[in-house]
Length: 420
Image (cartoon, rainbow, N blue to C red; front, top):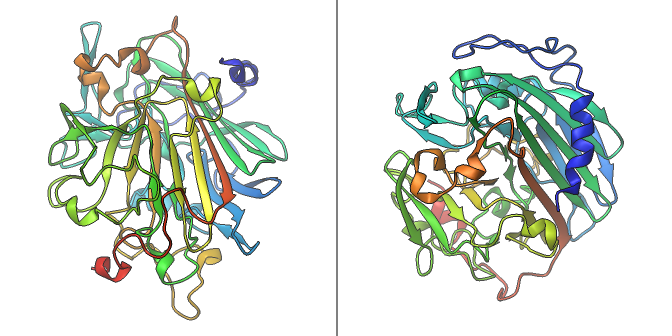
């Protein structure tokens, strides 16, 4: 069931370097030499029907190309043209474009948690100090990851977290990305608690636009369809998107995507305050009600499908995780230019718009370390004697005329409705 770990374990035994960073909330020191080389150099991978580029800064996906229904290559992820722009982004917008986020993805209430009677205080970097987002002020997205293996279709990064940002104990992290000839992108995030019990919940933070911004309509993802057959429930949040402890049923709500053919934008008008106070859109943690690891035992188990009617590109996701954070780029405001290979509007510069992309984070239940009644400790608290934390994702791309239940045309509102 977990045979895919073997090559990653071999890579772990051969680690030779990791970043040694000292900054706010960093209390440890890496036993490995400091990162060397250029953290912004792009490394290109390819397989039949798919190409991708990565940089060590944040073990980050910067470009992913697949062919559209006309046979043209399209870059379907949001990002920047040059690596150093991601550093500038971290200092200004802090979008987390394409990066690994951690040591604990998503939000931690009050930046505190307790393990075995010991309470830890993590830097609170969101909402004026009311919660921690994606690991603190300097998360995994701002670390330089070391390349330990590189082939024509696969790359493995390592990062040693020496109790950074106030988290207890050290963690050894490996991120392996592989492209396969069925036009798939596979991500394997594996983390080992080295010396103390600690929470671990890594995630990839990729912004998708399957329409690849090829025309005016695809500047938004509102008419793309989203299908999550196992997302029967979602986690209740307060006004700053921190869990309240409650869990709601998605059926019959604006967050119900358990039926094929539903456009992302169909019910967005009914999501007011559902993604935080004053927020209209989706930024919610969905629960996948099916057994953990079932995707590995049965590769046919699909937890998410997204499709663009313009390009015909369809994304199918398999994962071992039991949660999905879905974000419809509600915070984008049209100030970040698209990459040069996504500028399709002639002399008019195109920008990342509100509802112009969709983030899919495979992870466990948000802030589960502070909700013991949920029983998620086994999947969020790791020790030197437990199995490693493993986040497995397989994104497969294909061309489709539309999902089951799709009748053609716009199944959502006019994009002009949301250009505000």
